[in-house]
Amino acid sequence: MNSVYENLEENLGELNSILPSEYLIDGYDSKILCKKIAVVIHLHYSDTFDKYKKYIDNIPREIRIYFTTSNNELSRKIEALSMNRGNCIIIQKNNRGRDISSFLVACRKEILNYEYICFLHDKREKYPSMKSDMDKWIYSQWENMLGSTTYICNVLTYFDINPQLGLLLPPFPLGEHMPFPYEKNWHQNYKNTIKLAKCLNLQCDISKEISPMALGTVYWARVDALRKLLEHEWKYEDFDAEPLAADGTLSHAVERILEYVASDNGYKSKWVMTDRYAEERLGYFQTVLSKAFERLQKSLGLRYIYELDQFDDRSFEFKKMCRNYKKIYIYGAGLLGVNCLHFMNYIDVMVDAIIVTDMIGNEPVIEDIPVYRLNEIEFDNDTFVIIAVTKQYQEEIFGNLKEKQLPMNNVYNWDSY
Image (cartoon, rainbow, N blue to C red):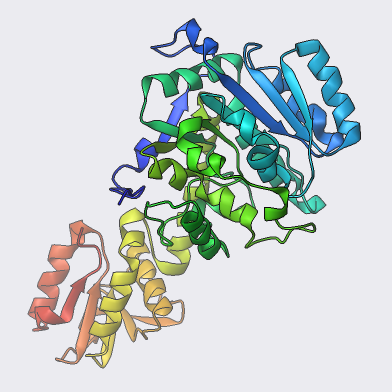
């Protein structure tokens, strides 16, 4: 059975491709544009048409463009653009199935005649409050598919020099209210995607525990990679009638199944980005990660990726250990001690006090927990001490506790790595 998940964590970097926008990559041959290549663009909103023109202008004139729409006003705008550009075909379509039926019904037979295909569509926010995030999503899709004429040539060259590559997808969109990069993205669509996979007789593994790579139904593809999906004789009536539900429809399943169709036919899928978009994305994630860990540290005592990765195991381990003791102390009133206290609060384990070697520079109470000097504490076999100080002080503190005849089995080093 083929799997798109083999060594996923180890090879996550290999799922990302960054291609330059302003210079051609090694392996480029001008004959690449002689191959059978098409771009299919579905447009629905007349008032946002101008937003996409600069990207359409990037498409080399050797590449045929198929425009699909069900909007008569938009048809006239597309006709004006097509007359100036040439090599365009406009197809009026039924709006049922929206963008999905554009490439699976309106243009399906035409697409099967090509070697490479790019598919894009317009988008619009449902509510004014979503406009900023929607603009970022549109930018992610169109920039990373049609970022420049040079970039398009690089995408085609990348396919040509990587014969195992079947699908190039824009990365998950970024936005202040967009959770896509941080979640599994199945929502209510895992079962209907499995149902669709069975309908197409796919033999690849589809795990609910791993997010599908494709989101938004925008892609560059080697047509052969999507052949099982494209050779199915879809009809408009296969798709849900308007108003389309927000989740759980056939359209949502098609959106998520693309990489699995490619995998079933022996092809790999990757996310692709222009170099300028990748630079912006890296800066965004650096800022977001910094903010996230600032809050994780304050709320859960987590400082870095290892602690986040170990969080569930550590929580279970601590709750289990702490049940064996009547008194629990944290040794250390600095940042690590406070982090440890936040963690203990989260797992609902009561800390009796915080211990310090002396009170110089220390407050008598930290977040409602009393702070005592070491010589004020009496230890016995029912006492558990968590040492939460940096490495330079740990040896001294272990020695202090040994002098107090506290069994070392009753001591845990919070910062042992």
